[in-house]
Length: 171
Image (cartoon, rainbow, N blue to C red):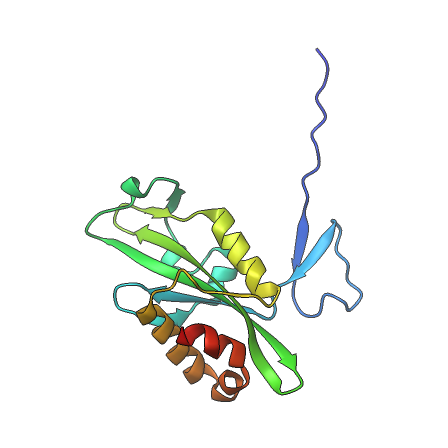
């Protein structure tokens, strides 16, 4: 019986601080999440909060659940729906700005210990934010309002510098 060689997967090192400071990692590439923030918006209460644990799938809303691909396993009286919005911050000529934003959906039922999310949507939304794109079409108007108020409250001068995001949230 012939031995099968295991193909090495395409791997990244997620590093802290500047990815161009000389540390190149041991794999094919490096990603810095230093300028990314995950903001969770409760779809029912329209409350937005930042949970930095979301960078590694360890936000409070995501803890202690098994992820499934069928919403039927999650739906119930205790199910909560969220939008996760990835926000990227960059420094431009006008100063720091909210540069990119990508939104995706998740549902969590802590009582059943089940959660629903489509991982590829989360990865693509994070990628959009990191590349400076603003894709918030999935958000309803109340969620856009909650995000707007949260970002304004977090840093008003950064909000004032972020005309592209202001425009996207006013639609």
